[in-house]
Image 1: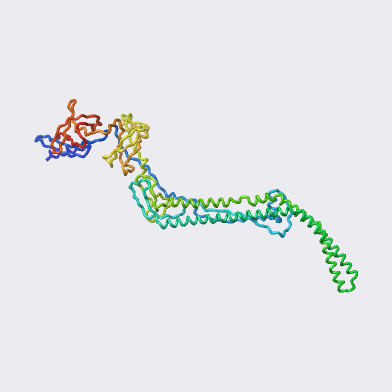
Image 2: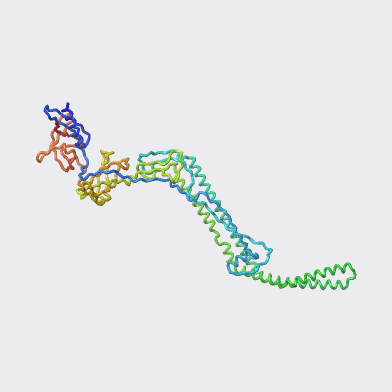
Length: 507
């Protein structure tokens, strides 16, 4: 019983120590003595044989986040009307003088005018700009952690109801912006018409200013002359009047006329001065009519230009929105393995929570320590072979991106160098922390037949193998061997897929 246990243990040790090139099985034959023959089958394969230094370390995978990046420039637009309260007709004493004072630093006393003045106004368009407050609701989440996706794959879908509500809001913003534009254009047209009317009025009054001034002086003189003439007539009537009642009326009329004459004579200088001031004021407006017009229309057009920009912004927002929700899907912006999902069905998207996080397939590295004895075979940009414990039957590619400074091991006094390798081909699923074996290639032959070194027996200058035929019989075949990496050897004289036998003795 003890002897059998030793045989089984010995066979197990052989299987573990011997690297398997392909699928195989083993059996042993008892020779009747203390030793038995063990036989292992291996298959002739075709591919590459690589020799080099192999080191192991954990994989490092950078993480990428995809966020809710639908940012709109404007979600509400309104128009407001602000009156400047400026009266600017040529006959206005207050508004007109305030404009001329500002332009020419000139002052004069004003006079009342019965002519109407027209107030000009300016329109400004204001908008409330903010990040999108649209509430898009998740309908279905299509991915889970650990799932591998490609750029453009559907991560989540959005409810049709929330999309339609958001679309309605954005269309309303366009309508509001267009309404504000029309209002600005109307107000600007009114401002131009009012300014043109005032300009024409100033020009017309200026051309007639001297005539009006002379007519005013003549009117003052004629009024005094007329009152004097009326007084003379009343005095003549009183002198010839015999009726007491009529005489009393004439005397009352006379006193009234004398009073009017006295008032007219007293105010004559003031009235003539007022007429002169009015004349000079009208001439001033006439002379500066064009400048005053320019002041009135200055800035006209800026409100409508601003309103046009708001219309374009609102339309751009709608286009951006439609692109984002095209098909009602949120598409992956990266390729890689999903490491986190930020939403569930019914959640509302927001800018603070990532939609998903990815293991970046383009930022996978392995940093291994290479000893002083082996570092000579490692160079920047060298290609390497990489295998993962999770995928033992596959070989992937990478290259050396960095060789760090030496670090000593205090316990063994061994000097090693950290070497960073970028993984360029990867399995479908790869996560941080997976163990990777990195082989720094010193020699490599490709597209050759190879088999385990243990299947080849060399005697002198000749080599041979034991080939198992389809009927189960064995055949000794002479072969030629080439490059070997210590585990596998290049071979000719057999065919791909042939089964060879590895024979050995166990106690």
